[in-house]
Image (cartoon, rainbow, N blue to C red; front, side):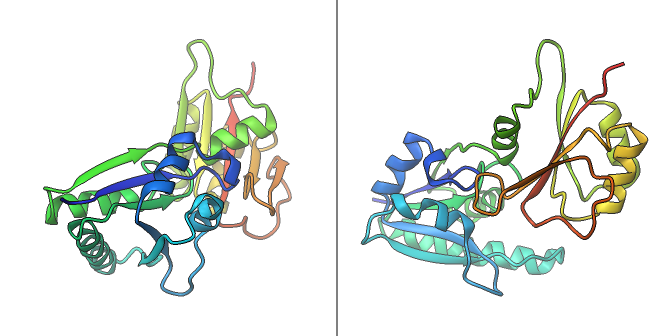
Length: 235
């Protein structure tokens, strides 16, 4: 009998923000699949989930390189999917850990699709997690949307024009991957009169958490785990 692959969202980084379902699954699986860069063994998701893991659970590292080279990425997904397939076909169940939610800008989506291509007979289940922007909104008591308002998630790697258009079209905007492309993000926020009112949140619910209002005068590049919350100015 084959095992099941669980995509488990462990939330923004605090061990007590995992769902009860996530904790149950982590206590039942035989193998933990932890995504990591080839450059180091660090996994924020694994550190977050560690208090809920059994002492005897096996941790299997899966390498996902930080690159835009499609050939390199596809090969990494293929290797990870084959490793996962071997675990499940041996009869063991596994949990792939992701910070936040497994289906929001997560490597789990690539693994799930690639596994479906090479081993469509294997079962996959997803355990949702609290996202970083939900945690940031809760931390700052920011209403994300109400009544007929729109909420839009925007990747910060987009062009300045695309960012500005998205901001114009949303009542509340969440800019993820805000550590990149900062000049374009600043210009788009400035053009939409959101530069001074937006919130920059980094490492939410983690020891290095920081939140600041406005991006005016910001020096350097925000940390990797950074996002921006922006409400449309009242007229």
